[in-house]
Structure formats: C-alpha cells, structure tokens
Length: 358
Image (cartoon, rainbow, N blue to C red; front, side, top):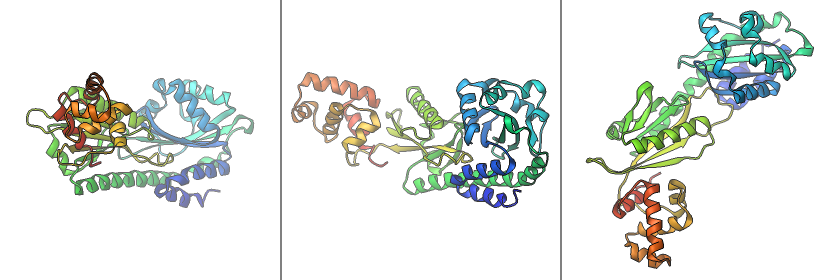
C-alpha cells in the first residue's frame, strides 16, 4: 500500500516543500483524513506541519495552550515506543480522552495513530494520522504497513536535521571569511554553530546557561533576548540591530539579530536565528537613510538629522542644513541617543558609520 512512499520521505528530507504532499499521500492511502508532524523540546512544541483537519486541531490546541498540561509526552518517556501505535490503545484511558482528543471530536476526528521519534539533537518528532469518526477505526493492517515505514521516517528526520546543521556551519564560516563574528542559534536559543571570531568578542557576546548567548551589558542583553525570542517564535520576524556602546577598553559594536527565513515545511531545521557582531569603525561609509531608520526605529525627521550628523557636522550646522530650529534639533538628538544607546555625538557618529557592513 505504501511501498513507494519511502522514496518520497527521503526526498522530503532534502526538499522540505515536499512534506505536505507526503503527509497527504500517506493519509490518503492509510484511510486517514489528514496528518501532521510536530517537533517538541521535551514537552514544549517548537515547530509543526499538518494538513486538513489535523492542522485545525493543532491550531486550536496550541491557541488554547493545552500542550502546557499535556501528559502524552511524559507518558512516552515513561513508556517508550518504537513504531506506530493506536493512540487510545497506547495511552492510558484518561490521557487518550484528554482535551486534545475532545477538540479533535469537535472537528469530526476520532481515532488517531502515530509515533514519537527521539532525535540525536534532543528533540522529539511526533508523526500523527487522524481518521474521521464516520469512517470508523483504522484497518489493523495499516499499523504493520506504517511500521515498515518507521525506519525511513527516522532516517529522513535525522538527515534533515543534519542538513540544517551543515547550513548553519556554512553560514558562520562565510561570515568569518568577511571578518564578522557570528553564531547560529536554534529554536531553543542554543548556539548550534559559531565561527572562531566569536572568541575575539567574548567580553561582549558572552555564553549563557544551557548553551545560550547574551550580551555583557544588561540593557543591551535585554534587547538581545527580546529579539531572539521574537525571531524564534516567528520565522518572518524583522531583523533587529542592537547598539553596544564602548566600555572599559571594549570597542562599540552593533549586534545584528537576523531570523533565518526558511520554508514553512522545514520543521527539522533547528536553526532559527543568525547573530552577527560588527565592531564600529569610524572610517566606514555613512549608511543610507533607510538603513538608519530600520536599524534603530528612527522617525523620518530623526533619521534625516542622524544622517547629517554622521557626515561630521556640528548640531548647529546639522540643524541649519536640515532647516530646523536648534531646540527641535536637540529634541531629535535626545531621542536618537535613547534609540541608539549612545550619549555623546562623537559616539553616535561612530556607531552610525559602523552599521554599514551588514
């Protein structure tokens, strides 16, 4: 029934866009209405991909936060499995009829089969198939057929995860060739890969517990952690840049947090965020107005004044060139200082010129 699906499973490891078609193909041939894959960090879901009513089920369960009290993953740790099982036969009755099952019934779903595959990186991959209530129970032969596919699922997931690691290493290596210290972080906020130049800025970019990354200055670190959380939760989040003023012999830096855009189907890629540190160098060119505005969230008026100041003019000269009063220029400058984390005009000019590299 599913003999030709193994090839599709391996192809999806290299081309994540194929996963929805693979899930639909397996669902159709096994008599399921739909299916899905979820990746968990212990009990916390970090990525998912589902089709049909399974996608609706997962969206409702996630929105309601039922996963926070979910007992299925802890049950798996206490009762390991190696293959596909029928949910209401594997789980204890109280777990098999939990909130997730109740939501599924409201969508017309009933019996569920699935498997849980531990990954070498520590995550768990859950693959499920949901059958419509009106269609009755799965044919018993389906489990045997799916179990013949189980090794292929496990190898495919491992291959996809390894490919993600290779892409992460390639990214930081490329930036090292450009002289940029960089690291790639996973959805759990852990450093997956970094280049040797990170050691050169280790007094600014510091390691945190559980493989995390932080900034030595508390105010800048708060901005960094907020940016990382946003990037990990949303692969389409905007890139952010965090100014780090010079201190105690350490040069001023700009730390760029760039969400790694990827296919929505690429759930096995652990890499979510690129962090790159650029040391301020006053000899660099002044960046464009658009770059200044996007990096530091400047208003058009603040952006215009900042660009003029970056040319080396005094505030009075900049106000005259911008066609504004000195009082207005001072107000704009105060706001620019706050947004860029600087306190002196010379420091601001150096910071603005240092944004050019990325």
